[in-house]
Amino acid sequence: MSAAPTRPHDELQYLDLIRDVLDRGDPRPDRTGTGTLAIFAPPNLRFSLADSTLPLLTTKRTFLRGIVEELLWFVRGCTDAKQLSAKGVKIWDGNGSKEFLEKRGLGHRREG
Image 1 (cartoon, rainbow, N blue to C red):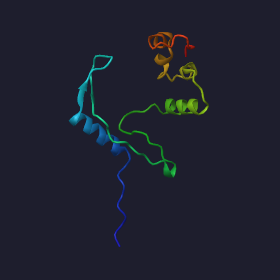
Image 2 (image 1 turned 90 degrees about the vertical axis):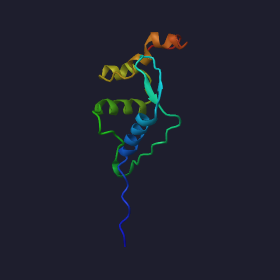
Image 3 (image 1 turned 180 degrees about the horizontal axis):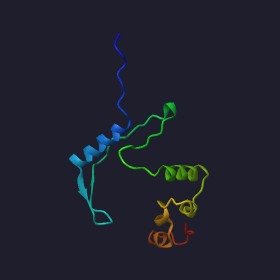
């Protein structure tokens, strides 16, 4: 009886996608002028949450406390980015500024 085939680590899906973008990606302009590479209709990535696992990239440093704070913020139904910012999680700061909202025709919305 042969052993069941082992499933590759979930993170390899992400690494394979990055390799594909680097190898076949088309140059695209972006707002910063840096330029990006993109592929049309990339494959869906599927991650298992079985056995208390969390799909977290290990090939780069990750702000784990920020990830947890943001997740709890979402779960609580919060929408005010100032709550995250006060805890040192700045990822949403630019998206709730008055300038950002006005540029998108949302100047009537509350800042944050």
